[in-house]
Every structure is written in C-alpha cells, then in structure tokens.
View (spheres, rainbow, N blue to C red):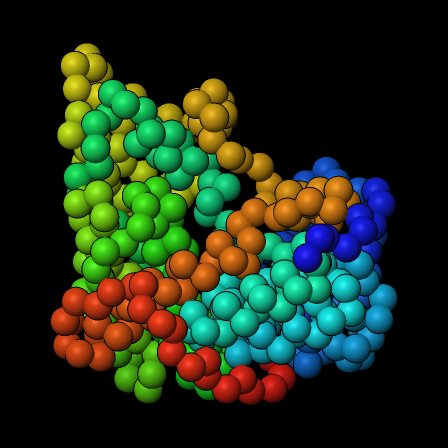
Length: 363
C-alpha cells in the first residue's frame, strides 16, 4: 500500500512510554535540527511523564488515547510486551510510528507488526539505531572494499551492567511477562542485526544461555556461534553483569583474508584497521571517523532526524520494521538452539506463535 500523505514540514510527535529510552530519543530529536512540534507523552508512572515533559518540552497526557488523538507520529518506547498492541493502534489511525527494539517477543510478533504498518501505509522505523553508527558504518564499507578480501571470522563482545537498576532503571526487564527474555532479545538483538547486516544471510546458529542472577526466563549470558552463507563465522558473547562502572560496551574484531578491523567504541570509535601491505595501522575516532565513513559511502545520520524526514516526505524509513524481522529470526534461532543445549538451529524456519502481551508499561 502506498504511504499516507506527508504531514508537512512540522510533525507533531508524542511518546508512549517515558523512561530511559524515551529520554534518549527526545534528546536525539532535539539534536536532529529538524523542525517538529512537541506533543503529549504518556507513561503509567506519572513521574516519568512529568520528567520528560519538564526536560524536553512535551505535555503530560493522561492516557494512551490522548497521545494518539493529537499526534502525527508516535514513539513506542514501552516495555516489549506492549509494542505490538500500540503499533497496531497507531497504524489503525494512520499515525507514523517509531518502535523501539525488540519489536516483539519473537519473529511472529515482528512479522505481524510489519504487516500492520505496511497495510496502513504509515512510515514506520525500528530502533536498530546502530546501523547508523559511524563506527559500524565504516566497518561495513571496509568489508565491502575488494582489497579486504572475504570476511573470515568475527569476535563480538557486548556487555553492560544488568539494566534493572542504575541509569537504565528498567526494573521491568526482570519480568519475563513484560520483557520476554533477557540480554539476547532485549539488548543483543542490536548485535545480531549488525552481524547479519554486515556479513549477509546466516546458515546456522548454535547458542547457550545462563541465568546467573536467578531471574526466571531472563538470561544474563548468551554465547552464540553464527555460520554465514559466505562461510564466515562469528561468535557473539552477550553479558549482563554487576559491574556498575561498565555501561553498555561493545568490542568487535573482524578478520578478513587481507584486512583486520576492530571496533572499540560502537558509535564514534575508535576503529582500528589494517590492510595487507599497509605500513601502519589506521586508527580513527570522532570527526575523523565520521569523515572517512562518509567518504567511503556509509549511510550515517541522526536516526531520529531520519525518521522525521521520512514522515515529512512520505518516504520509507530505515531500518524499517520489516528490516527488523530478520534480526528477530536470528534471536528465535538462538533460543531454539539454547533450548536444545546448543544444538545448531537454522534461522530461516517458520517463526513460532507469538507470545501474549500484557498491559501497562514503562521504559
């Protein structure tokens, strides 16, 4: 279905959910330089709504319906179990939507959400924001350089202190009924998305998980091995620990036939790389990293500004909800493997039946 008409140069934006990630997007919207109007924000925790309103200029709403009644575009930044219901409600009203990751508990829910926004013709963007990272954008272009040869192996580590406390304050992540699962779904879906985006379709997945914190259904360790159709192999280690001095941190090494690339900071670097025959290793970060990524043709930019432009112009957003489905299929394959004690699983099988959603949220 064609997209519904663009809303003009100023989009009225609202929020459903007013926690940590909502604050992140509110700040990114302000930094985007795009013209928009601040509409209402709702969260069942009134203190969260009031905080977003005071700090970013939104108005406190008393219900979800009050938000949807007044906006052109809405951010769904709730706990995961609410995403599918709220995206469907927005799409039914012709409201453009930015939905945080993960979209749903599983690929079946993600497919249903993608189908809902496509049928309604609304612009919809997923929260897989690391695709616009200058660091990973540069990595993608380096791997595409014929001088690098074929990617052979990737070592990917992602760790953070368990986000039920501290600056994240997402106590709902200890509730399987609202979160769905733990570090792999709630956090490292970013990483699985990046690996597939950078290296292509996945042939097989083997995964093991553990629950060191003893929270039922919420794994805090996931170690996955991914085999790609190109014969490249990647290992992903995702950990939620209790070292509160370590917020979300990623370290990635990519070995190609004739190149080595390492990412030490997942947005602004540093990124280190060396091609066979180079005299010295290149190390880039900050503005120099951004400039080189752009020179090589990486698709960068503020993801929230990109969403506003897509809404304004009536064009597709990227990454879309449909783009996020492939990442959910990988997550499903990882959990299927872990359930069988690490036996390899194929990510291209039919998705399982979507889990039931619960009501009321915060993020």
